[in-house]
Length: 177
Image (cartoon, rainbow, N blue to C red):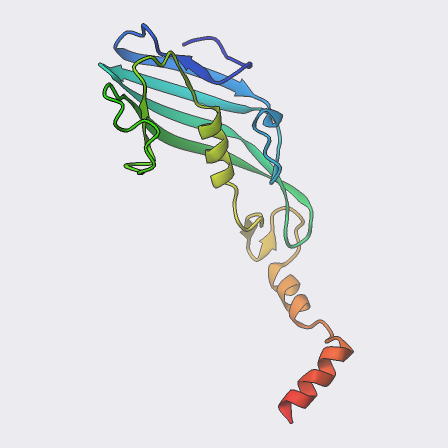
């Protein structure tokens, strides 16, 4: 396995022999410029690159921990992630598919025969963003939030029993009449 690479996420493919090659990248969250969520610590990317002729099959595994604010109680909580993705890089000798607007397969990337490096930083960033949960609510057990310990049913009922704004109350009375 190659040494951890903290500077970039480029894999040199020129003169690479056929077979399996392993890489490990350790990056700070700031390297990816993701503002939607915080990260507890660095993001580790383990890559297996399988070269077969003029094709490169890249299998990546991202591990780390998101730090989010609970949408119910606004307490911070941690959510570990383990994201796997696969991309196939294929050499396009005729130049038919490079810079082509037609999407053949989102996991298939055509590269020039003159390509010396594959940079996976943007792909890793995209997969980190795609896997951020839409609802930022921690797990619950026996109707209790595992972060704050509050009973979920009470929190939901409290929200439903809120007083109606007097302005809306008048409008609702007029609507019912």
